[in-house]
Length: 298
Image (cartoon, rainbow, N blue to C red; front, side, top):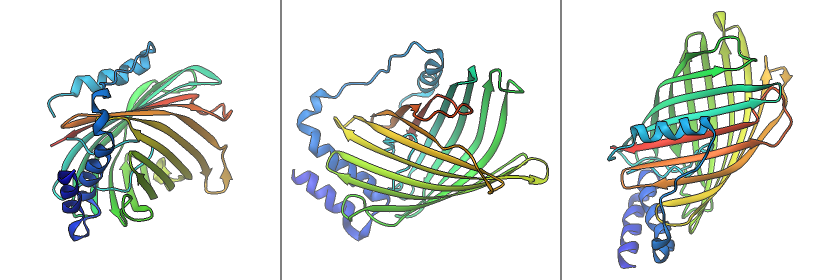
């Protein structure tokens, strides 16, 4: 207990609410479940679906001896930031499948990110390449295509463990072949013992096509709850709501997804997986989507 208190105080000294908080938060939450650590088991998702198998294959093909950042959610960001000088690689894979009008539809989106802790409150993410592969009856070209390269900044404002609520500001710029996008996000988080609650609200503007003539906006909100079963294994649920605005004048259909999530963290890597089901009846959107994030700490 004295070791726990010592590490907590060490992380809080100097108002280190950003990078130091990730380590402090982990110590606090681990203390709640240390007595039940023997119950922690490695989680091995079972799925017969070929698409989900592809996601898992990507993980284990790159998993090696590698400490992870504490990413508990696949569709929501957390308000905490990386410690100063910390470097982490994250591999994102999102699989969307089955539309009402196209049961053969499949799309895989890939993001390759390097995260850097710049200050106690500020971190930067560099997405080296965002690309996708899609096929199905509703897809004109069944092929892989490069989409963009992106840079994000996250600035931590308050501590989700000791303040009434943890807040962070997020900004991202994407630039690709005939694609330019700006995205802003407000991140809220609250840690209560082994529980973590998050909420994100996002506004994005995109210009695409010849001379960037096609523009649209997007409003998105997401939320999640995560419970730390053991120091290594976490489970929870996630919610995602999206609306697009063509030319910022025409409002698209509102689509909602909901489903469970799970996260496993080892000494130097982690994996988070969240399969979501569409709760609305929007024929143009995928009925199912699953996101996996694998992180490797250097």
